[in-house]
Each structure stands twice: as structure tokens, then as C-alpha cells.
Length: 337
Image 1: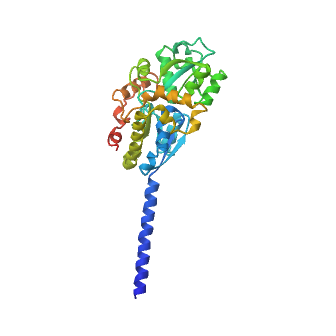
Image 2 (image 1 turned 180 degrees about the horizontal axis):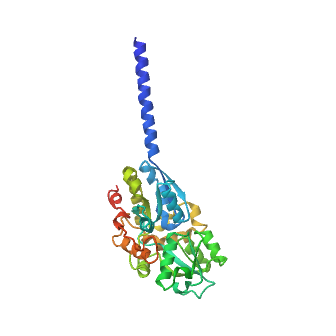
Image 3 (image 1 turned 45 degrees about the vertical axis):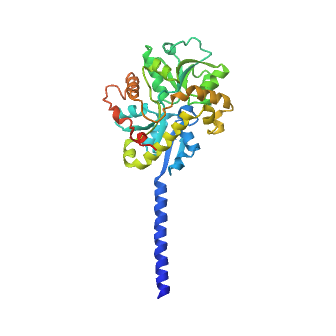
């Protein structure tokens, strides 16, 4: 009898332990999140890889997979298809997509300036302003990308029509550099560290600089929230716990950026991001570090500036009523640990 009872209790305990194990596995699986980054070697998207390097995702009990996609518009499409749960990309996609009837929101706002520069090939000194883009091929990361949005805005603002120039999708980094070297593009919009690489060799010059707040306001008329973690509103509503954990990790990362030197931050990044020039990488980060927010909160005046820019040329936005309050949320960052 005692043997039977022992056997029964052992079996029962085994079932409880198995159930607990399965529950833990299920909980762990629920916390697996895939985030696509619109080029994670770009300094504008540095918080994504930095959060991973600092172990902040793991600290929150999250299993985050970062996927690299050089063009933000392709990352956006992957999210809409359900292949990934979030995108580290420009906030302007949230407004553009609402114009298409899709609701996406910035959950953590990484930056308050684009961090973008319009570079002109040294072979084309005749390009002295965006008004000179007529008949030119202009490099952007991808068609429908944020660099394309901004390029179109600069051209239209300076009296050109969209058909007066050609946007050429050339990505960033080496593909952008090669396109300029081969004269496939005469000018183009890109970020660090690509900017510094071309300036160092003298192959390009700065036409428009949006790496700083002052430079951004001069060109775009106000604060321009750019790099962010954005997600489908429906996913955020159904996964508030996971979203809060992500916000916790990224707010800690932004605080780290705000309280550490460019050299200290660079030391936490993968060495291949330096592209053989760590000194140049650190210098570029020193010049652009101020673009990052300290707390992940959307700048109050920012969404209006982005809407004004998109309204100039985006057929998805023109004539549409855009509810800006639905393009971002500050709830999670304000509750971050």
C-alpha cells in the first residue's frame, strides 16, 4: 500500500513539474520578439544593437532577435506581413501608413533629429542647393524610405516637381559609396558612419546637414522625430507586458547614451561597425550623439513637423485626416523603470 502511495505521489509530482516546465517554456516563447532594424550599423539606429550588447533585453527576460534590413520601407513591409513584431526605423512611417488605413505607433522615440546629411559628389560642384537636383540621380536607401521622403521634400520645397529628378535606391555604407564613386548618383542622403567615410576621402561634400537640432530646424522648420521603435497598434494592445519590457530596455539604453562618452559607447558596439576606422566612428558619434532623446519620449512639437513635411508631397497623406495622437504613445516610456 505504502509503495502504491509513493508511486502515486511520484507520478503526481512528475506531472506538476512537467506542467510547470511547459508553462515556463510557453512563457519564454511568448517573450521571443523579432525586431527588424533599417540598417543596424547606422549610428541613427545605434540604440538597437547597444541594448543587445549591454544585455538590457535579457535583463527584462526578453529573447529579442535583431534582423538587419538596409531599407526602412522593406522593414515596414515585414512588420505588416507579421514576419517581425517591431521595426527600428523612422517615425514618419507611422504617419504615412495611417494615410493608407494602417495603424502603427512609435513606442520609444530614439531621436529628435534625422541624423541625415545630403551629400554631393565632388565631381558635381554645380549642385549648390536642392534647386540644382533637376535632371540628377539622387541616392536614397530605398524607394518609399525616409531618406526618399526627405529628399522629395527638399526638392519640392526648392521649386522642383517629383518628375524633375530620379531617386535611386542604393542602401547605405559601401553600396552608397560605390554608387557615388561610379557616378550612378550625383548626390544622396545618408547617415553616419557613411558620411564621415566620404568626407574623409574628399569624394563628397555636405549640402544639407540634419545631424543637429539647429540644422534640422533650419531645414525642416522644427523638431523632427526620426529613429524610433514602432509597432502595429494591434500588437501593442495585445502584448502590453512585452511592450513595457522593450520600453524598459530602450529607455535604459538611451540613458546610457546620455551619460557616457562617444568612446565609451563605441566600445560596446561590434568592431566591424567601425569599418576599420574606430577613431572616425567615435568622432562621428560625438558629432551626432545629441540627436538622441534622453528618455524615449516623443518631442511635443515633433509630429506636426513630420506631418507638414509629408503633406508637401506624399499622396498617402495629402487630403487625408491624420490623427497624430494615434501615431505614437508615451505610456510605456513614462512607465519605464
